[in-house]
Image (tube, rainbow over all chains, first blue to last red):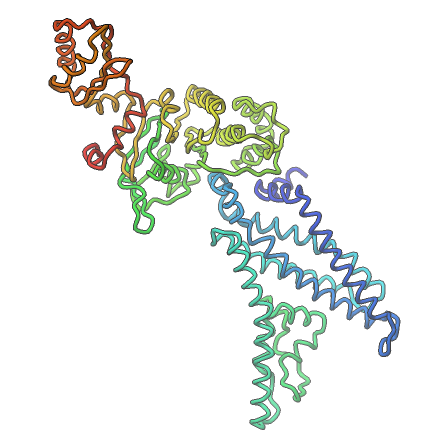
Amino acid sequence: MNKWRKVLINPVLGKEITLRMRTPKSAFSIFAYVLVMGLLAMGIIYVMTSGSGMQSGRVDSGVSRMMFYALSIAQLVLIAFMTPALTAGVISGEREKQTLNMLLTTQQSSATIVLSKLVSSLSFMTLIILSTLPVYSIVFLYGGVSPSQLVSVFLFYLFVMLLLGSIGVFFSTLLKRTILSVIMTYGVGLVIFLVTGLAYLFAMSIDRVSYYNSGAPVRAYSWVGYLLGLNPAGALISIFEPSFSKSAFLVQGSNLQSSAPIELWQEFIIV
Amino acid sequence: MIEIQNLTKTYGGFDALKNVNLSIAKGTVFGFVGPNGAGKTTTMSILATLLAPTSGSAKVGGFEVTEQPHEVRKRIGYMPDFFGVYDQFKTTEYLHFYGASYGIPRAERDQLIPQLLELVNLSDKKDAYVDSLSRGMKQRLCLARCLVHDPDVLILDEPASGLDPRARIEMREILKELKLMGKTIIISSHILPELAEMVDEIGVIEHGVMVAQGKVSEIQNRLRVKRVLHIRVLERAEELAERLRDEAHVSQVLHDETGVHVHFGGGDAEQSRLLGGMISAGYQVVSFHEAQSNLEDVFLEITKGGADHEQMA
């Protein structure tokens, strides 16, 4: 046990985890996070079962799948907000607390320090994500979602956290002040989440207009679909619904039976 | 133990260090003196491998700081002028963390840390959170942290700044103990009297230039172009003051209730003749002595004007 501890936990990582878990702030963050997710799940069930007009008034597998999607997208948005907040100050924070110089004169290499800080932040994020599993269990109560889908969604979260976390640590190392680093990380996060999505919608509309105007015969997939592959939300939806990748590439009106050139989540991960 | 040659550091267009040369033997306590912004912290940061010099070389224990920083870090304990602590740690955990960062095994640390806390008089605070310690205690804890890997060289940047007189005395006592342990210590300060008692050598730096360097007494002698003589006579002090103003080598004469103070530019022979002259003129001399110039006077003498430094440098 001790041997493994020695191999897996270096002093910086041990320090980070100890210090993080000692603050009441961490417990509050987890509580607030699970509370938001729980309220969201309850809200969806309430709306679905209120039985007005179109709704059947009961939760069937279709509804629970919808709920799973909604929760997963909400979780993705929360990750996008939490990860920069957790990682963008790890190095610049040490600098501001005037502890960085002493840490740098120890035998720990700069790479060890930076990576340990990234891993400790991400492990905390993972803890938060795992703590939302009970909320997901509500979905399993009603069926409609396979465990493998859940696992792949969680792996996808890990990947997004690693991406945003690395950006956060990068800016935190580069910039002297935490506040600047946080702003830059959110800025880049915004580009990844929002700008790619908007660019897809915009480019797709232009592409369709030009397609109809030219009156060309049925055409294969549009390049515009690749833009959506850069968007985490797009990639996430493509994990739920494999047909989504295909439709993203299709120009409206055309109907090809072949599969999409690439699954969106694959593209996202490759990029 | 420490060799610095032609060390230069430039920030933008500003020269923080200009061709600094310095050599410190093993076991020496070296006082680094100079006004704020003179280049003390820059030099120490370079030695601590935190800053790369623009040109020149700096070696600790024979290892070049830029080429083998890992080896240099094993040999130095660095205490910055301003530092923070991890508030959520207890003092022992704090030392355990740094000990582990230096690769010291747990069993060894368990033995070492009580000894270190004993050395810096913090044994009774071993379970206290670092947050709850006073500034003086934090300063001492930081010193214990520097010692955790038993380095040969201690680089202490203003270790006594912001401490009350009692805490300052405690810090001085600890440093004396470290000197006895044979550590090579570089200590910087802008408050000179606190260094005077314990340093073997001093280096005075100003505007990035090493203005003077050597044993404290040597530098005092070198600088003693003018000595101040304190003379007390039984009577006719005012008349004596008037008379001394016309004497050779005397540049300034002050007279107050404690006696006559003469700024004298001559050597020992001239000084003896001056005394002989006074006695033969019938003055009843009670005391005639040279004022002891301390480090502070030396510092002020060295750094008092631009033209002077050029000569000294």
